[in-house]
Length: 434
Image 1 (cartoon, rainbow, N blue to C red):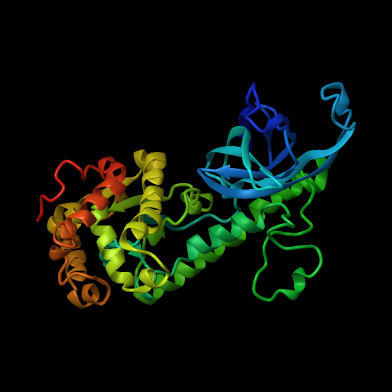
Image 2 (image 1 turned 30 degrees about the horizontal axis):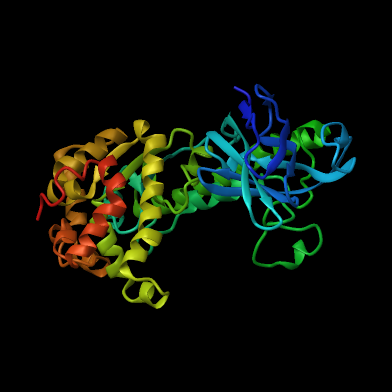
């Protein structure tokens, strides 16, 4: 499989209102590359004013802004009323490790007046890098959002001899996620608008960013080819080796010979995905969900008056703070759920033995009665729960939404979260545990 393959490129046959012309010159559908760098160029002409930039959007999230700053010539043949030379072209190199393995990029033209027009799209797929380091461990990512019981599940996983977890805080030390993010950022081509600039980059002692001199693409000869592939693989080796060493030290300190390391994968963007799969292609993923009405109550309670101090009432907080996070989880499940294992917080709280045995079985590690009992004893530590929870006990945290707030608040919960509730099977019996 090539490192990168472009499956389809499309522009509307009829430009949208406000756009006179849109062209994607590069790439073409069917283009393949041995490197992870996507070359992109095209033209956009607006009906009024000019386009300032092309925004590349993946799963609703902007991932790159490309200036429209290239002068195109010979336009009068098609547009007699325009000058023969016009600054309407764009060209960029895009690092694809920030994108899912199968991706769609929407091209959105942004006018100088702020208006936005979708002028095209492309779909593609990419491989994982090929580090020279052989991993000794497998990655286990617990994908969720806040207030779903991740601390409870991580504490149970940490009690298993085949799983190593960094114990600091509320299990919120994530070296694999950090080095996977480093790989995606440092392997990307230069972005002088939003990342490191050629002048002054070495004065910033707090951020590194993309290499400001990585401006050569696959069509620019040997350097572009090296930057797109060998450089990426070498970075992947460095990042993977650091993750392995980190968890080897943790395992020795805990007296374990683990098969997995486990980290939380708390989703905060729609494009986040499973970034560690570029270092651990065989990573296992457990999605932890909870009745999202209970999640909302727990979030609002845990944040206390902070959201009110920021000008939010409960209705706005649900719509603008809670619902987007939940939707990221739904999107992740739809994209990767077939290969993942689903755990419902309610099952973990009320039928923990069978639920935990199912998780261990999915991982292929000891799921015997004694292994499950050891993990349950760790999870039953009420001091750990009350230090982080917002209900008196785990059991009382189930179905709390039906006991809190007024009828209008509960109606808003159902309205705002309905799609997500249906996705995970919560809507049929909204208060069965109450």
